[in-house]
Length: 158
Image 1 (cartoon, rainbow, N blue to C red):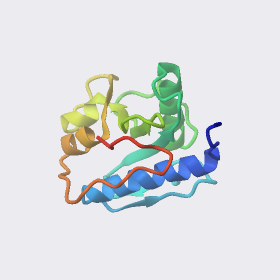
Image 2 (cartoon, one colour):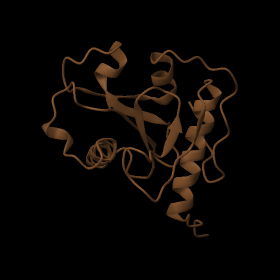
Image 3 (cartoon, rainbow, N blue to C red):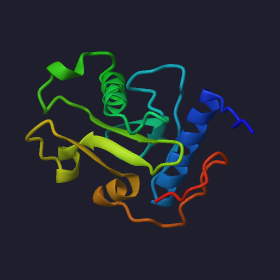
């Protein structure tokens, strides 16, 4: 029997909705952003984490480092309004997070490591960690149950 194909736009929306539900389970106000604009005013998820621009990726290539780096470049470009991000000093770099997973994987976050160090901006080192660990490192505590996965994924969230 052939596997059912998933529309990539629908999969992206489902991924963004899942992330919104996870953020809400940690007491963070969140909703999906405007997807047609691109730029600093239209992140994938609008939330109340101060100054963080979020890009969500639900893609089978999530485990591939080139794909993750390309996603990080995209969120940096969006957060800076199209201005080249790699020429900036660490003080000028926006707070960004790429939240992603493969279709049957765990949600993970790629962000600047200094985001976790209470504002220390001593270098451009990236950190890849589970979404739930990142939220707790940022000072958020889970306030409810984690949401169920979308219908095309059968594994647990954490």
